[in-house]
Each structure stands twice: as structure tokens, then as C-alpha cells.
Image (cartoon, rainbow, N blue to C red; front, side, top):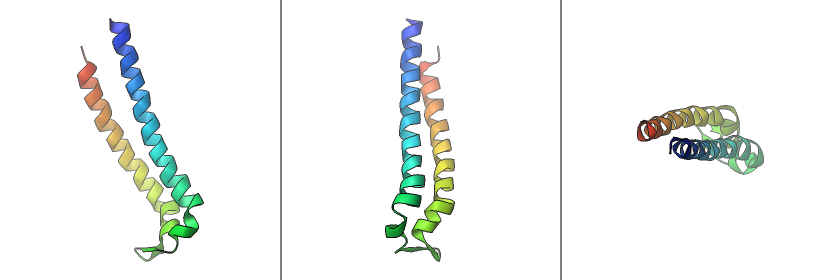
Length: 82
């Protein structure tokens, strides 16, 4: 029984990691590299939006995702704590 519980726990953990890292990849590589020309048509705090995502946006997104991961893992730990 405990082994099955541990397997479910790690599968959910890997699911969280996959989703959160996919979001970060999309923001950092997608917005900062691939879509930079389209995003540079817009201004954000006086900077081109594509440039802002490449320089600051991906960092802010990563920090926010760290806090989301902490929240999700604390909730998961409480649920599977025995």
C-alpha cells in the first residue's frame, strides 16, 4: 500500500514539474526568442515587449512558478502525509 502511495505522489510531482517547466519554457524561449518580433510591436514600461520578456519577464515568471510549486508541493505533502 505504501509503495502505491509513493508512486502516485511522485507521478503528481512530475506532472507539476512538467507543467510548470513548460510554462517557463514558453515564456522564456517562446516569447523571448521565437515571438520577439511580433511582441516588439508593443511597449511595456517604455521597453519593447519582446525585449522585456527576454530580459525580465522570464525571470519574474520563474520566481512566480517557484512559489506556485511550493504551494502545490505543500498541499500534496499534506494530502499524502501519513
